[in-house]
Length: 388
Ligand SMILES: *Cc1c(COP(=O)(O)O)cnc(C)c1O
Image (cartoon, rainbow, N blue to C red):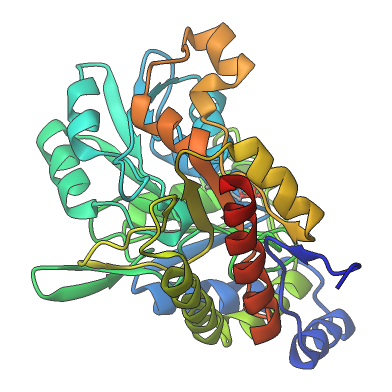
């Protein structure tokens, strides 16, 4: 028990994954080959979107999405302060201004009422983040966007496999029913991995074409799109793009991982239920909330410690071998955002209250029942030690 260390997240790689990557490595295509398109088609189908564009990582996906959305100088884009910095950084990449809106105290996701308060003539978009896998209130956000002509980019880095119900229908995150685009990340801590990797889903022909162009330097060889034709070698750069491509062997891994995604999410939910059962009822512990109209993909399990010293709890759990973490330091409290955009402590009380009390517990599909029991015991014993 002394040497036990249970990280907060971990990838699950099996022999089939390794075989799939090996096969891709033996093929003629290491990059720009058939596995990329196959992976895109399978993700689009899984999410219920028309198109998917695979890229080198989730941050690149956000970058291309904000460029395709045409956000730029003078535009304001609203996002959540409780997210990884990339959700806000992409707005700055586009030369636009990030505007934060406070979260709901229960779901820790953007509060549509707070978003509405911040909409002004300069507002061009919203980037809702399905924090920890809990889908945002997309119905309300979609309506705000429609009324104010805003582009919505869902940050689904935590939420592949999550779904929500509106008017009797179930929508997977990534279906883009209430948004223009959704992005995913395939970093090893996320639900499924390609090492590094990302994806953008959309139902728009126009956005799809733009994303394809932006992913490869702004270059096209498509004869129907060229402005002239110099010869068989000819290609055209039509906009300023990047090299944000992903490789075929990464996509081979992604295809193999996607087959196991529902099983991964199912196991994560099982563990979350075991945690909820163990931690509910006590006064000191606040378990995550799941909205009735949504099914979380349980990317992270955050427990809030009320009237206990969070730092002491954290240190004690680390001493007991739990790789606990805190997700996230509110983005508006990062020095970069304070210095460049004038944000301050006190700006978003719900986000800051959440941050002051939250600890992320280990949660990943390969956790054994013994691991889960060990975590539960470590948390409960720490609470009683610190109470005493
Ligand atoms: C991981 C993550 C990203 C960025 O994904 P990368 O693949 O690491 O670039 C963006 N947003 C959120 C909420 C994330 O958790």
